[in-house]
Amino acid sequence: MSQVVGEKQIELKSFEMSFPMWIGFLASISVGAICLYLISLENANRAWLNVLIGTCIFLGLGLSGLFFLLINNLVRARWMIAMRRVFEASAMTLPVAALLAFIVFLGRDSIFEWMDPEVVATDPLIRMKSIYLNETFFGFRLIAVFAVFLGSSWYLVRNSLRQDHDGQLIHSTRNYVSSAIFMVLFAVSVTVVAFDLLLSLDPHWFSTIYGVYYFAAFFQAGLAVAYLVVWYLHRRGIFAGVVNRAHFHDLGKMLFAFSVFWAYIVYSQFMLIWYADIPEETFWYKERFEGAWHIIFWILPVVRWALPFLILLPYAHKTNFKIVLPVCVLILFGHWLDFYWNAMPALRLFDHSDAAVSAASVFDGGLIWQEALVGLGFFSLFFVCLGLIIERIRVIPIRDPQIQNSIHHHE
Image (cartoon, rainbow, N blue to C red; front, side, top):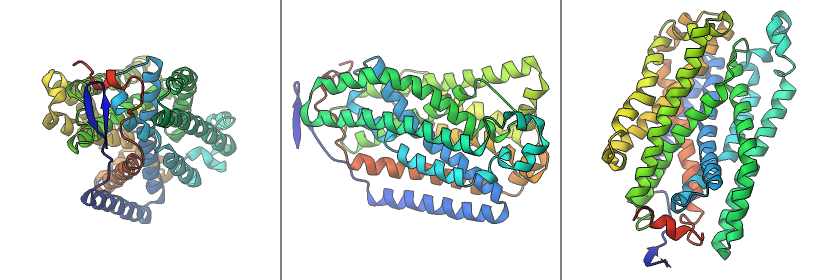
């Protein structure tokens, strides 16, 4: 099936996941599940923390698609319309993220120290925070934020898909207007999720910038996923004649920019806490400088900022797939390592060890390699969900009134 857009004859091809791709992803998910089970036999709390890390990764990748839709609707960007369905598909994975969040809620007693009534009774600070950090309110907040995420993504994608049938501008207009409201709700909801799922792992610590930290981390990773998927669809011929070199260059520029943004936010949080030198804040970093944790501390800025920054700096590198694709994979590895470094030291709250002992138990026992495979399993689960969604939708929004401008981007 083909469609004439302006002076171009566009071949509309559907996407179908190849058999080797299915085997690869399912094998990765299976290995990850086995590793998670083996970890649970040794330490149930550690297994649940890995589930939390995987959930935060999966959720963040879905949210990156939603945010990309919102921000581009707000500025009425036309360049991304040709590949918009990739980001819509990412946003459509959020129901699976909601299911994973429900699983995290089921294991809440093994993840969050403040869920233990005995701890609350004996710790004055946690007791003071119990107005916010309590089981009922925690569950209510999860329902509220996912109502925002699922509702906004459903509304935006529904209007986009309806436009495939009638080509009416009103659907775009509705998305433009509603995105202003959804963006405000999105910002608040992402902050709540970051505070509840990651920051509250150590209820004694606080950081007002942590919501932005979570956003910077997941959006950089989301752009890496988008580049990989758009490249693959282009390679399969689905985006042939639709996505051009300029599109890839713009995606590369955004990946470059948000690598810098991640570094800026990470440095801002660290610098302010280090400069103030308040014990109630510095202990969180102090724990992550002890034992083997400090190794990850020095690896993170290399894989999430320094290498992407230096490699993607030249103009030509942003569209050289042999260069960009390994950078995308490196960023995704750094994304898992980032959340692992953020969350896993909280294990000491359950085994009553210090941070150095907790780190040694992870590195010396080789569990980090099993946990890396668990993380890979969650990434694979996301790609499977993404692929299944892309299989069921028209990949190119051919009846969007601005599609011609997008196809001829920078030509």
